[in-house]
Image (cartoon, rainbow, N blue to C red; front, side, top):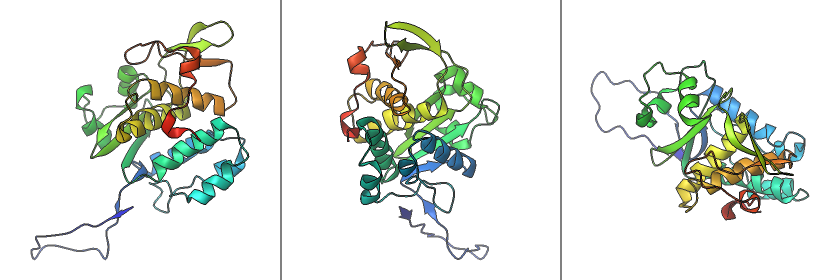
Length: 250
């Protein structure tokens, strides 16, 4: 979605460029590096499904994910299972949204983008804060309201132990680290998109369910997150934790 920048006050020192593109709507990296990382992690989510992977591309600006025609989506997901179809559909909805979803894909040793620092005042971040601060305070990632849309930070080398991973056969919990692609599905799709459409469960259930949907789409069915280490800590049953949010079902 393109925007229009209107200049109301002009003086003798004002210089104009032929055109200024205002990038809004959909999934937008806070930098070109973040844009490339977003693309890589979305494609990794469908790593052995090349027909689905191919529909996800960046615009020429290398910041924003390119809008996907509905027919292109339908053709790509037609012969896949419900988990693959629903995860692809979720990204399709976020990418084609008129609302802007900014994403900062960072490492613990990298300085956070200024958008992230200004969007998270409760984190008390300094101008030189690193991704490590997000990892310490938010356990790998965070999503917040931002400029009428959302902003997500994903710590790609998160060292945070997430304690609610559960071994499916016997229900035993164990800690492990989240991966960048899981965090992107959890924060951007679960919290972020759900926040914008007014889902009543975006703060907790939606995010956990998108983490689990990601893992199943990758072929892992022997573990899931039960949400006991997330947000309110409200425990989800195995059946509930593995549901797909209604707005993403395909």
